[in-house]
Image (cartoon, rainbow, N blue to C red; front, side, top):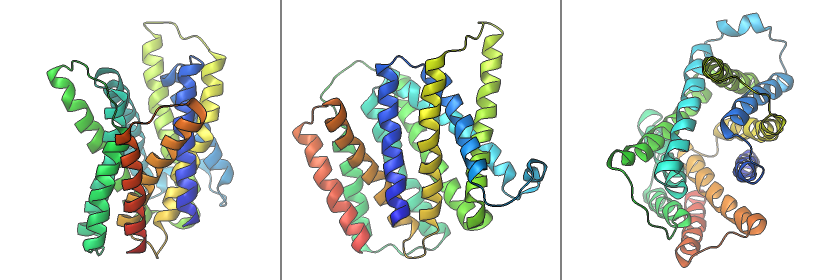
Length: 287
């Protein structure tokens, strides 16, 4: 359970850092690529085994990390586009409601038991994520922009499904650090290729703020994935419980951080979402 708590704490810190990017005018895309490099380095440093870099391509999970790295980059860009064209709250809801996808896969692929209490908890969790993220704003949205949150929802959900699959079938507990490092390394490599292609049209300038922002983001980003993998390895909790508690707790924690650190205002609807979130976590955890 402690691993799940740490995953929530580090993920909540990521949202705070993203908020600070806007305050200090950090270019998000370049900081994200730096963050992937930093997260990769942290994982390699924390790896207990004496694995040579030349041995990594022979790991049975290596090709999967390449696909995950690509998915990380794609989903990130989709999230950015959703926030810009549809709204930040919509992007947040689409990302956090995606926990429904690994929950469904957990029931059908791993034959995890889901009783009536968990079903009630999941329904409350979906409602909680929506109400906690809802904003009282109206804007004109282009017709095809509605596809963006759907793609974010699907992409985020399949990332969680993939992490569960590798934790269950391919990666031993002793390799969690190495696996996480290689996933981030793959994302960093893909991102650097994109930057190099872009630099052929527009010269690349080194920005210290982007580098510092990436370093600040890279460490909690690594540990958010590392502790989620460790939590999924807990035999006392099913992935249904873990993904539900993890995503809803992140919404709660991020909301409270927003209130405490950035004086964000909460509507009655938002507070109702927080109450539903607490209820959903208690029901799922106790069942």
